[in-house]
Amino acid sequence: MSAVKPDSDRRRKWKNEPLVLFVEGYSDLTFYAELMKHIGLHDRCFIQDLGGKGHELLREQARALLTPDRLAQICAVGVLLDADKDADGAFSLARNALKGAVDVDVPRRGEWVRASDSKVRYGVFIVGDGDKQVEVESLAWAAWSGKPDNAAFRGCVEDFIKCARKQGKKLKSTDKVRIGAVLSVLNEDDPRLGPGARRHLFEFEAAAFAELRAFLKAMATEARDGGPPGR
Amino acid sequence: MINELRIQNFRGFASLELPDLKRVNLVVGQNNSGKTSLLEAILLLCEPSRVGELPWLFRAQQGKPDTWFFRWLLRDGAKGEEGLLSAKAATAEWVLRLSPPSHQTGVVTAEQDFIQNPVNPALPGAPDDVITSRARGRLFYRGATFWLWGDANPKGKCRVISIQNRDAKALVTLVGKAHRKADGEETLQRLLTKVDPRIKKVRVDPGEEGKDDNQVIVDIGLSELVPVSQAGQGVYRLVSILADIIGEKPDVMLIDEVENGLHHSIHEQIWTGLAETAEKLDVQIFATTHSEECLHAAHNAFLARKEYKEYDLSVIQLFRVESGVQGRVLDRELIEAGIGGNIDLRGL
Image (cartoon, rainbow over all chains, first blue to last red; front, side, top):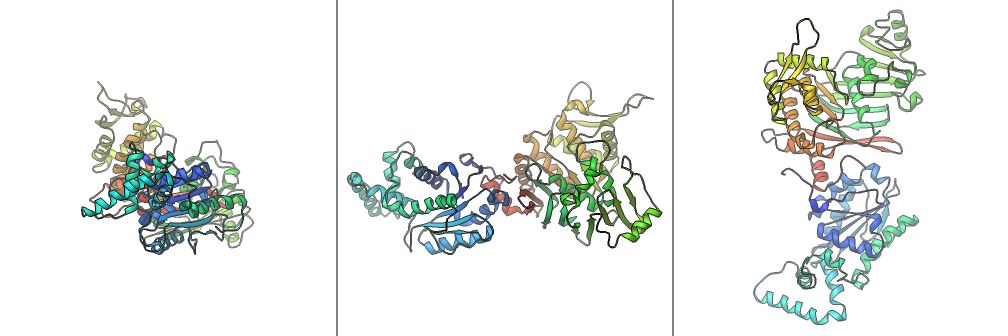
């Protein structure tokens, strides 16, 4: 590894926030930050991005961040990973990483469990299920394309996808390309997911976000109430 | 070289285990998290008979060491259980125990022995009830509130650089010693120039005959050499650290707040020089820092040492939590994860 310098885009550091989220990359961070604003938890939440290497870095970054003195001030730690065609694999990875970093077992995804020797609760949410290519862009696409007002433009985007495929272009992630196309038109200056969310292009109350919203709300509600874990 | 440390009931530490220590060990943590206490423990382990110096070595000078200083060597003011300091080196394990006065089992005979044959009844500046004895190779240090016992023989030479600057006389002695070592003058010069290219020469000026005014002078490109104290606090500290390592060639160097007076832009060069010198002279360094830049610079300096196979740096994190001070040793993987993730490794 070459000499390390912190990415200037990721300057924010943990400052006594009681809620901590680990997300895959900076793009996810900006998007989830908007979602947390939407549900009123942004001020209490610190989001740590894993530099686009969520699968490799989660354990070590969790070890580095979740020190005993910080954990004494933290109520809940959540991990949000994309399924990426293997939801079970993504969950196992997050589960093992938390086990290795803080010795806590999170047996099921989407649920919060309390560490046996502290007040801190841990949860893992995998975006998507089964073996389809699903990521946070899939939720954003579902939310955006499901809105009747966007039906016509949706047709344009689907035509674009069909056309690209006809040209022999292989798409690794169709939803990512769809959202990219939408954002490149609707938020031309900064066609990234987070800035798009900041401009309210995605309806966070849409059904596509329901499970994720519930997971994140539960993180805080139970942290405040000290109630039992659950969704 | 110390590979592992174990500390129990010493100062703020209830129980601390630090495995996998390296050639250079950076100690980080908030104020009052035990960084200086850790250095004190290492000093005691290396040179137990220097226990009487502890009040002055790292902490602000407060005249006579009162019994309050020693009282708080044992955790919870000696109300608690026996304390333990132990270090594992490559071929040996060193153990020192600290007992509250009520724990006299196994000590009484020796106590009578040293009371009858006090070797050093009055350490400089020590109160009257402080007595040391090296009878039979064991050391007992009797403050009003604790016993220190174990093998009093030095296990390794330990040098201390505190946050206070050395006085000018001490610096003259150190630089003189460094210059008398084979290659010492050249090494000191080369390292200093690497860190600050302005420094072209370091000398001990004997001063005028009959006057006790010798001093360390440096050539920084002015019309004449200037006293090192005039070249800035950073240069003074740098000369002090490097001359100490080269001149004294200790086994263990303890540096409190290593970044003190040094601009962040030269941290990496300093660590490059320290790493090289420590390895060459077989010195182990424990240095505390409050500076994130200093920590990153040390990491980068060790990464850049491509001619060495081993990444010989660890970071010792100390945390103050409800139950006392806890700590852990970060290896390369964890240091990289922290720095790469922009996570503050210094603690809260």
